[in-house]
Image (cartoon, rainbow, N blue to C red):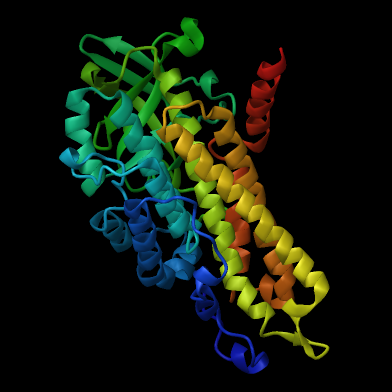
Length: 412
């Protein structure tokens, strides 16, 4: 959380600085997901404590500099947050997907940018290797992904965003190698990653059925990381283009089967959307936790701002929406764990949670008035961070189309 400028307390003597607001007890405002196991609760509690102790003091600086603290990355690995679902034999914790979502939510309540790094690394990159990688690839990469190596998922391109399978990156076979050429865009974690899961087509005539996933080491000649993007929000999360120019990759670095990459991408992004939902409800909760105490300190017309009926109606509505989003997210997570269909539930969870995050952050700024618009308080950062929820891992319109398809299937 950002610190207030020197002298601000003299201007508004009753308000606390942002750091103090951010440390307000979340237990007073938030409800934990229903039916967490003891292990899942342990992960959630550990992530909450870690975020307050290790992430909170760095939030303002990382946002201002648009750079993740390198030492913090190391601590995320040391504390096991990057390998929650990776099996114990490969150095992870072997915990549940719900435990992972609880970690993402807890971290996002302090800094959604750090949660983005953890989420994409763990629920998208590491799980792709877990689910579809050969034994050799799992043995090669999972211990590193659990211990010290960040992962990136390279699907989007300048000309293929929502139309992800219109990608142009090529993989031309050359003996026991494939030669990759193309450009990937908006790649999360690229600045820090040691592993890049690159989606490329081995045969453009086969359209999406030619798409194949390759595990590419960052030191592979021909793989170049472009300049970091200057983003509106989640600024500490690295986002860069990745250029592949005559990048030779051994055929045994193919994840799964040739031509099946589109299936893997669809599958992993469906569950990844639940992770984004967890991030967004964490963001909303963190913003509300940092805002609500101020409403009962700030006085106007002789009363606390939070005691006016008009304000009560507003924050009651936001908390109801947050609880609905939380239930959608964790219901989708449990369905996924049980091996039951969850695609449209994941779409609902991401869509609802991203909307609630924007609502909570926007309302928090309004409720705080002029100071809410200042960088001295965390609400404006949460507001900037919230917008990405409607864009990445499937835009809001894509989620609506997914839901509509499921609804139609019930009646046609």
